[in-house]
Length: 298
Image (cartoon, rainbow, N blue to C red; front, side, top):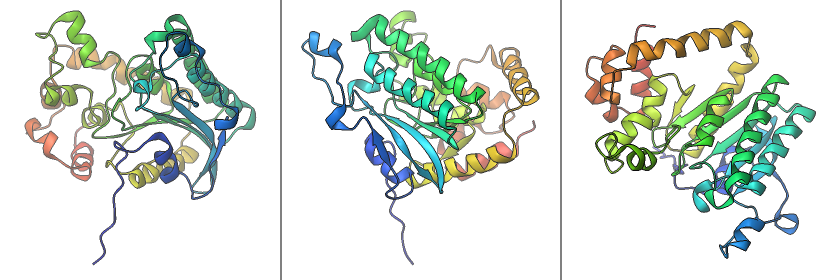
């Protein structure tokens, strides 16, 4: 019996994720080290920079399909978006509109805007949002992959939900405001950021999958993210976005507030979804959770 070796997406760097996600030897980086420009804002604040400013962009193949890719490096300033960082992502998405690849894969690992760059970072986030929608309007699916240590929070949480689809692992997190931000603003009684079980019950991959916030839930394994992305693109060829499909999705979102508006925890929401033993959800592996969701009434 042979045992397959798993390579954690959560623990990997942006470049390691790209190396395992794309077809071997197919990746070509845009703006490599020799021509990269680090952030001038960080230098003015005497803060260390990075030659790629915390994001890797380029082209490659996924299952022999030509794709463009952007991978945020969560280990550099928490993957926060600054002016150069954002400009690279926007440029990639504009290239997608011109070249029409099979997809853009957006490996999100970010706490949001880089506060050191203030308005420049906020403008960058808004430009990314517009560029994602422009790519989708041009018929290019944009797939967000979320499973890193920084999750997808703040402006990048919004960007993730603007994408055509989201692939998450249990370890991934997706939300608008991070737990620490909520605790700081509203108090620990509202949200205890140190309660890790609570954090993942509210923002984690399993919860987001049960709530239809992500299209696929995969194991914390680079190969699993690759398989999940390929399957999504296979489905996309058969059922691309249509106006009727988008309106149906919006109708489901509008029904959430009345259905779950008074729930304060994932456990309460899961019970409202019809799960008989909601306390067992955190103990289930991906396959078991997927089977559970498929058995829920729609």
